[in-house]
Image (cartoon, rainbow, N blue to C red; front, side, top):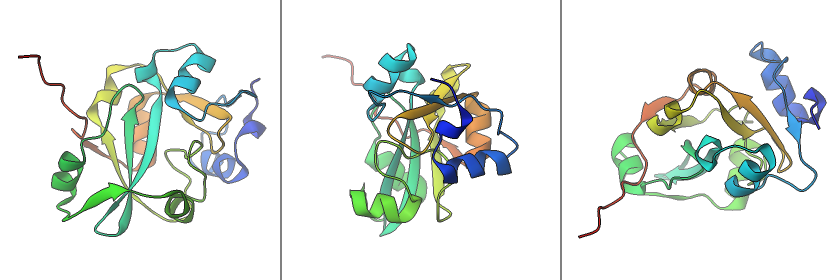
Length: 165
C-alpha cells in the first residue's frame, strides 16, 4: 500500500516541513520492524534498509543511521563523538528522545534535536529505505538527501570484518 498518510503524523509533518511531502510512504500490514522484515517487504537488499539506532553517549541520546546488513562499532562511535561511554538506549529512552517506538524510528522528525551520525556505507546505494515513524511504514530516499535532511555527520562507524586467519 502506498500513501503519504501511512506515515506517522509527526513524521508526515516533518516531511512536509522539509518539502518532501511527495515522498512515497509504503505501508506493510505484516510489519517492517526489523531490517530483514523491511527488506523482504520492499524487495530490496538488506543493505538498502536504513537502521535508525539510538545510543546514549555519556548519557545523551545520539542517533546512528546504519545500513541493515551492518553492525555499529561502539568504539568507533565513542571515538567519533569523543565520549567516555556509549551504549544502546532502552525502549523508554528511545521513545523519550525521538517520540517513536523502536522498529519505527525515522531518520528525522524527532521530538528533540539529536546528534546524528550516518555511516558512510549508506552512500553505496542510489536509493535506501527508512522507517516512516511506525513499525509498518518505510519510504525511499537518496542516501545523500537522507544524510542532509537528518543533519547527520558522515562517519565510519560500521564494524569492520576481520579476514579469517
